Length: 105
Image (cartoon, rainbow, N blue to C red; front, side, top):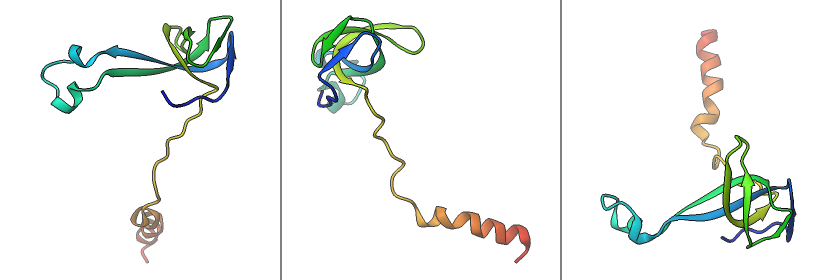
């Protein structure tokens, strides 16, 4: 739970929550030992249902599909920080080579 973007969230704000689903002792026995050793956690984004809350407090949210979920407030106005990685030179050349092939060059 390392992300925090705002101190105070108000009802209706877009937020992200965190919750531990299973402790290490509750994990399925057929999963690898290194996976069994850590808890199963979830992060969910939605609209805050509490009147207000500080990051770190236990809150209730409503997801975009209408599900109500409780958890610890992790971030207000969370951002998407994923990327598709560095461009691959081979993939950058595919269009040009395809156009050449189609034009018969």
